[in-house]
Length: 456
Image (cartoon, rainbow, N blue to C red; front, side, top):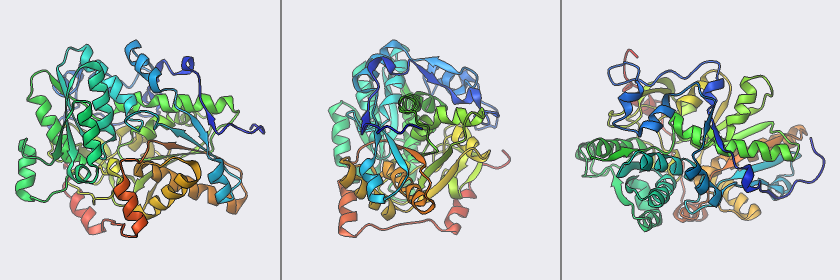
């Protein structure tokens, strides 16, 4: 490892932006289980054309092509905000009095304030290339909705965003910025779809979930001429697009003569974590290195740590194909914590398979502990992190403190997925001491898991 002092921020040059996405599935020892149609039959590419653009459907089911060229039109947009910096958290290291070196890949340097734009640009491009008129999607905390609003506006597409109602109310300025890019934003569950009306009939005060918002967005996409549905996480195609994060991080660390001992990312559906770890997981699978890879999820929505590895619907309305993943059940209703982007009942099939096969670990963090880490990081490193990103900060700090106890000078890399400037209600609650932790009971999880599809 290098003994020279690393810069606080290392930027690659424009010519070092990856020109190909890396498909981790091509190097996995065993492929994730296939996507199933509701009748239990493995989905073929043409089966999902009514939902996804054709090229995205192809990427979704392609487990063999290792490298996929990034279209020139997508690269031109990437060059506006990429490469993103690799940063050394010197002040955090000093405050923790740790011998560990802490690096983070910062993805907040664009209007959406998060990594989500990496896939939004790609998905909007393929929709435009196919001649579509518009898109539908869901969003939790609003980062994905914001990113897709930007991308849709850039390529001249209409966009309807179903935003989880609790986040819609908590983060009104996310709605404002999406509308600035001409997106139509609807609080979910809503009275605009059959799924939404059914949920509201059962509970008029339902605060929504990502699973519900997905159901509504899919319903509108398949019933509206010239529209398709796009998703900001979970799917194989999304992890593929997000591999630019890990590829840039690996190259930047190589320039510093560094290699991470521990790689940490927050996990809701898995997009940023899958993208960050891609080249390092490849090394682990191929036996070239053996980093510890840690997923951090909210204790209020613990898909990895307390869920079941099983086939489940990706949406609450049970209209989507089924995926083999760690899940809490498609009917699970997470509490209204402030990490809206992590309030999803399932997890990426790729990451679920890797976790199931022992290639990675998972921990769950309580909301108040996460915001404690977020506030410390903001004061020391001058970036106010998104609540989702702060889960990774919490775990990175905990690992650094363990290094302090053992005296090991490990190199830690975590993903700082975005900024928290639209999350001031959450920060205010933490500062006022009114923030609480809500962890589901075993009985609640058992009841939700009872609804999993049988005999699959």
